[in-house]
Length: 430
Image (cartoon, rainbow, N blue to C red; front, side, top):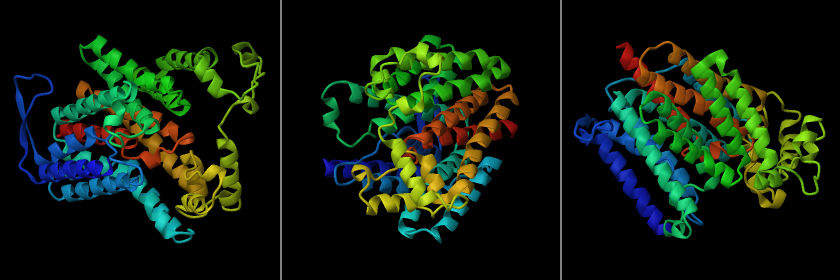
């Protein structure tokens, strides 16, 4: 199967390059099948690339193929900058992102391994390049909508292959594994909620939103459950501002109820032998962090911070220090990832790195908020609220997952939506 994944990778790369260099194609309208649009070559490339973020093309003993595909897409986007007629749109948040990348580069000079530092920089560079390309390539709402709807279709297919018995064995390694997919679904769920409010197909999009919320509960992935909740609350803040408080309270209450009433979630949430895991004890303060089962992650985080962060709080131990240490030392059963991008950022690039990266996510959210309330065009509103809400939802998952490692499937979505938002807003202004 490794060879099949290589073939799949070569095919999709060829089509991406072919689209990018072409004069475009006539495609069916995403709104009315009897109508057609002309999409330029870069627009066709964007539709293909954005909608296939869930295709990993990995295989046992060939996990680097995912990194190769990520690098390939970045190279094609860079080539595309010389083809598209419009220039990338630099918002304050994206300019700050460049500052963050420069800080990562500086971190390589005092890192234990420049090679590991380069790998980390590559994964952080991808969302920025992806976002900038979208801002330059997307010329109208039809392109953005087509790319987003196709991404949702691919996500539906991935759910089918994940939950229907045995058929997943037909395409091993083609789709991203569950943890990355569950984080990807946060953005698709948010897009479906947006369509619920901005289109007439209420029931259809509500069911889609529920469909993409379910996997994190069925798989009992606490990180993506948290991210989904944050995305819904962020959506409410953009949509209703101060009036969103009842929705936020409702999400928090629903989350607490779910933890204590869903058996599989309660079992995974608390340590074995925790007999007092009830809502009543929680209200009385009888539940502490000592009762929470972190699957030894907290112990690993403390160890990494003691080893690579303490004494280097401001600048960290250098870009890639965590990966270099975990690959060269057998710790916690041979784990190779920290299962917390926040911990990794602190250890690699210190508080400066953590504050910069957090500021980027918050600035994008605030910019989307401003765009949403600064326009009367529902098409721009649709993408602004999707980008802002999914950004905070996915950002929350960095707390206890390797979201940056899955950049192609995870961070590409909110940054892609943000890039399309910038493009649509710019076209509206023109």
